[in-house]
Image (tube, rainbow, N blue to C red):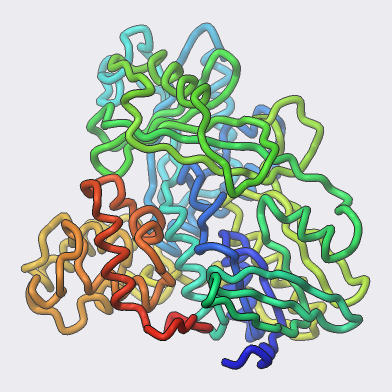
Length: 522
């Protein structure tokens, strides 16, 4: 593509997080011409720094956000059916602390949580005696009673990638590491200048779009102001949420929900087999979201809360990894960050070419948000198409047919066993990891392979060149960080130095002559 060649599209989506990728997918599926760009990798900021939960938000009931909780609960099983490989049901244990909420109030809240939306396969809540329950043994003896309820787990970074992949396979152009440097509004179209690459590989890509979607997450207010010349009517509250990962504190599949005496809720969840994930904090944030990082006080806070409940005590020195993200919450004048609403607002502006700005939101409601956004976009462009994403699976989710099904959620292990029978030479751990990451698309990765030697070089332990080629060609992976911390969490498992080996291999595999691909993956 020459620098003076202009991309023509119906919709330019700025921001490759979960909301931007979801909107691009939905719009492309309605026949709109879509360009999605992000200045960094897909999901490299807020969308890969979540608590990894598909949940209604039990604690939001305390703030009387019944509409938000119901909206999220309605989405739980829809999402689980759509991607049973990267999502799965998860049971949560809530130890009861008699010094905090009374048991009757917790039972009432769980009763409401169970009934705000229908459940096809997630079991309801129940009271348990922790002394006789498997999840009770890691806890201190003072916690004798508790409650168990259902929500879901998601690989958040892969959820973003799969939405972008589906958008691409439906005709969208996906441009990573491509910054929207400027845009100019006209009565019926936008002219945007995208800048792709760095230094001597930089190229400018002009885009003409009928509609601009601002899905820039923590930067959304700034983008809206530049686009319109005035500050948006609704302000955003930027809140930092941090998590820590420590060696495994328990060996069962339950997760925990704990309450700190200050009222904050923190989760402790099984993570990557050998670890426990603990989070999150809620800290007011000012500054550049690109530079967000956990503070020592946050690490100490999370360790303190875990130590309040678990027999095994941890200290900041036990933390093997941590991550932080900036959540752009709608400013609702709540006294604390934890009480601020997690609902979303779509800012619709037709004072010229259409502009849609996404403010707020949570990962559980991303599909619903994208659907509402695509309704408005297609309507204002005169290209109305039917809603479709609630009846569709994400790439790799068609385990037992092309339609979403409860069976794919409930019988995932059976599907994995069938995969292992088809490829008996695959090590069990590798087969499971690939099944969870790629679902049915693992067969693309395995095409023509009849043994481990056919997977090519083992670039790092358990990471073969066949997988790296797949990630580069189909999932926009450009460096070791993309592979180790977003397309997978192999960074937790591999020895030091592997990132350099992977970067060297990827550099040798990449096209030479300084070319920057416009529409990859091919």
